[in-house]
Image 1 (cartoon, rainbow, N blue to C red):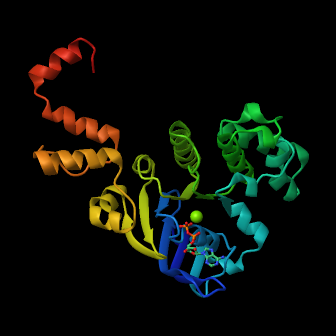
Image 2 (tube, protein in one colour):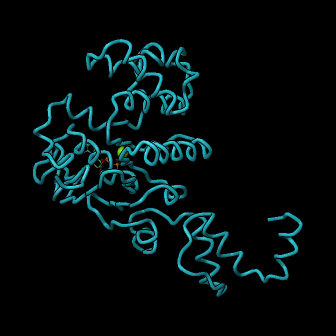
Image 3 (cartoon, rainbow, N blue to C red):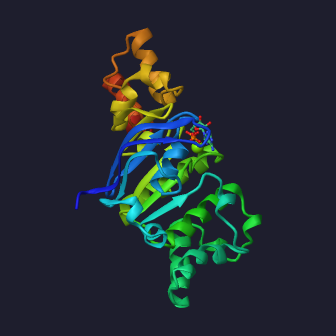
Amino acid sequence: MNSFALETDKVSFAYPDGFVALKEIVFRVKRGEFVAMLASNGSGKTTLIKVLAGLLVPQSGSVKVDGQPLREYSQAALYQRLGLVFQNPNDQLFGATVAEDVAFGPRNLGLPEQEVQCRVAEALLAVGAEELAARAIHHLSFGQQKRVAIAGVLAMKPAILILDEPTAGLDPAGEHSMLRLLGSLNREQGITIVLATHSVDTLPLFADRIYLLNRGRVLKEGPSEEVFRDHELIESASLRLPYVSRLLHELKRFHGVPIEGLPLTLGEAREQLLKLIPDEVILPVIKEGGL
Ligand SMILES: Nc1ncnc2c1ncn2[C@@H]1O[C@H](COP(=O)(O)OP(=O)(O)O)[C@@H](O)[C@H]1O
Ligand SMILES: [Mg+2]
C-alpha cells in the first residue's frame, strides 16, 4: 500500500450544463499531512472536495482513498475513513441539541449507546465545545456551529478530515482558533487534514503544503514558502500575499531593506526585522524586559 491518504490522477469534471470545473487535477495528500487548496472563489475547490468525498463522479481520471479506488468503497466504509465538513454548518446540522446532533453518525453505525455517548463527549472535547452539549443547535453562534459540525464528523473517527472553507464567516480570532484546532487534530491525533480556503494570512502557519488552484487547474503545489514566492502567480490566481509578506517585500523592493527570502508569518518577519536593529539599540530594551 502506498502512503497516500488521498490521490487523484488527472481528474476532470464537467457539470451537467457542460461547464468544465476541474481539468486534469493531480492532487496527492500523504497520511498525516495538513494540506490546503488555496484558490479564489469559483476556482473549483468545492467541486474537487465533492469529487474526493465521492459526492461527484469525475468523467475521467481516478480517485483513490488510502490507495484504494473510491468506487470500491461502500458509503459506510468511506465515511469512517473520510469525514467531510461542509462550508455551511446548516447543511450538516439537524439534531435538536448539540449532543443529539453529534451522536447521529455513531448511532447510525449501530454502535452501543455507551460507545456513542463516549464518542460524543470525546468529539465535543476535541473541538472545545463540551459545555455546549445540551444547547439547541439554532441558539449557537456561527463559529460554535462550525465547531459542532466538525465534532459530528470527528465522532465517526475518520483518519482524513476534509473541510470546505472552515474559516469563512469567522472573525479574525475565530479564524485563528479554528486553524489552531485543526492543527492540533493533525499533530496530536494524526488526522490527515485537507481544507479549502482563499484566506492567505494565517494559512502559512498551519499548512504543510499548498495546492494553488485557478479555473479548475492546479497552478502550483508545494510548501507555503515555495507557493508564495511566485508573487505574479499568486496575483494571477486573484489572490494576494499575506499582509506581513507584502510589507516586508515592499520594504525590500522600494527601500532596499535587506530582507532575506520572503517571511510569511509574523514570527518570521519579527526575526528578520530584529536582525536589522543594532545590538546597542536592542540590548538595553531586552534588559529592561521590553522584548
Ligand atoms: N451545479 C453547477 N453547474 C454548473 N456549474 C457549476 C455548478 N456548481 C459550480 N459550478 C461552477 O464550477 C466552478 C467551480 O465552482 P466551485 O467548485 O464551487 O468553486 P469554489 O469552491 O472554488 O468557489 C464555478 O465556475 C462554478 O460556477
Ligand atoms: Mg466553494
